Image (cartoon, rainbow, N blue to C red):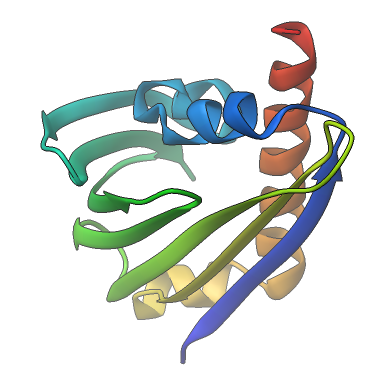
Length: 142
């Protein structure tokens, strides 16, 4: 059964700073809960291949993704990992007066055993923790 994640947050930070933070794949372990390591494997002009390592429910997981970067958008597609499929995107919009709108949308399907272990509330809490940690990291680097 496919699942979706959607969140939208406005922050009092400069667009370039926000986009650069999101586009820096190696920062992901600093704000994604349970992510032990984030590694950039390959970098081309318009895309990157990265790997995230997680320790979750007493098991290690790795997700390898292709991230396509453009002016205000980062599209993510799982290449290898625990999901049956995972696609997502970060959208960063420059508002006025140093305000930036951050939007994250994803669609994914978990394997049967993980699907039963992770109710919607847990996934929502995970996403909320991720964006809160990201915003705290932005504030620290101001």
